Amino acid sequence: MVVKKKSISSASPWSTEKGKYSKTNEIHYSFLKPQLRHALLLCFLLSVWFVILRCFLSSSSTSENNMEKQNVDEKAKTTSKSSAISKCEGGMSVYLYDMPAEFNKGLLKDCSHLNAYTDMCPHVANRGLGQPLSYMVESAVATTWFATHQFIAEMIFHARMENHPCRVLDPINAKLFYVPFYGGLDASSKFHDANLTARDELAVRLADYLRSKPWWERHHDVQNMSVLTVERNPWDRVHNQHGIPYPSYFHPYTSHEMMTWQNKMRQSSRPHLFSFIGGPRRGVEKAAVRDELIRQCSESGRCKLLKCGKGPSKCHDPIEVLKVMSQSQFCLQAPGDSFTRRSTFDSVLAGCIPVFFSPHTVYTQYEWFFPAGDAREYSVYIDENALKTGNGSKRVVSIEEELFKIEREKVERMRSAVINLMPRLTYAHPNATDLGFQDAVDVALEALWAKRLKLNV
Image (cartoon, rainbow, N blue to C red; front, side):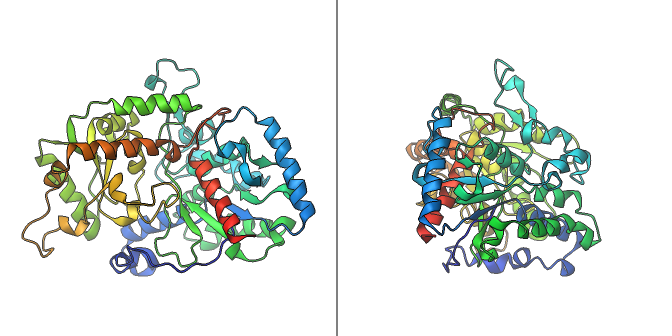
């Protein structure tokens, strides 16, 4: 996603991590082993093109007045929507480009070839929500639970924007412009294509298409764009990348459905001190951390391990995943093929306090969605180096000991904070008409709108 903003220099509290992960950051494919190159390229392609949002600079008071009138008309049509963002306060308005189908929904016609490893046809169903999990609720009618794929956020975001109360139909009244390009799906379908020209063909055509539009050409600078992605580059110097949540399985229609689930997670019995859902990884850095987590969890009587591997596995079953997490006080979130994990957002949905081993799993990624204050209010951080032999200490840190010594009252406060984060990390159902809370899409739009007002453009 892309929004106008200035390049602001700010030192990250985690800047010392850059050297450790410099290969991942720079993505020098020609010097990396094939397996690592494969993983890095996939992550990069999935994150570079997601959706595009651009600020529109109003040049006259007439345009402002027209916009205000349009907003009044739009509000009149959506009076039943009660969330703060649904009121479109302050004049926020978004224009959704009516793109040729080849850039988004047209790609779904060949859904079985959208991913080199998975048939995406079941996952692109229901506007990107995937297959219904009707057995999660008493009634299968209007279910809010789906087996949602982790790399399908671009479709869900698009679906939410089509029905969003802040959408305007006339670009002259818009302050934000949204370009629904399914770049992640396009990239994953061509990942193995050795012909770089063919691989980048659709993205090039997109650029040509946008340049032909007067509302895009009015502001020529690409620096006016902001990218929304499930994983941003922590060392982005242009500061135009912003992390948004991976989609989980819950897509409610109303605040009542959200509060009902939150209360259920508050009352959930949690016999396991901690749990880990994941499998081993290749590569020295990844393998060392993952192997240690699996070892410690399997040897602890207070840990529940759901080990992933090749072939059928319970760790790919949403019901099994949520069952383990909802019965755990803490959920270990080690980096996988990249810094971030969808599992982080699954753990929040289950009311399980996340335990991080890299600052780039959440702290440097999702500034709009997690509290800006002390991260210890909602998470535990254990430096991954403390889990490796030869780290300068006499022994590897015991995860069980670190978690067990946290006082019960503090654990309760942390869990409450995690459960309170659920709404803003959740993608509501695209057909919701009376949501009553801010979901992930609302939070992103509000942050982009606040940035525009701050820049006074």
